[in-house]
Length: 78
Image 1 (tube, helix red, strand yellow):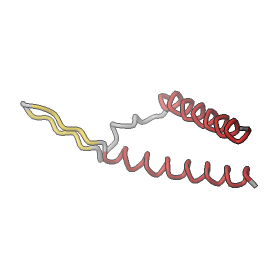
Image 2: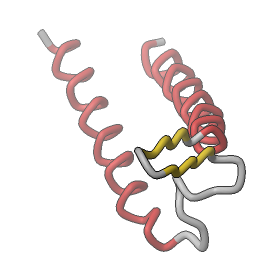
Image 3: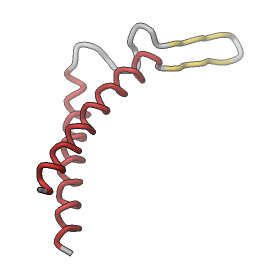
Image 4: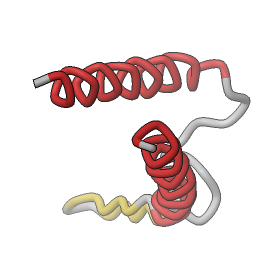
């Protein structure tokens, strides 16, 4: 039962960190979703938007964060 409590505590800390990063992202000099390389097509019958560059940047950042979390959990579990 104590293992479950540890995992919920760690999950809570991770969610707090993610929330803080999202909150602080408003202070960045650039806005995610409006980067060069994002595809935005407008025509008279509709719109199409695909955040290609934003998706790639978020993928790299999340990969690094998840790998750091896995490393921290493996060190914590020993």
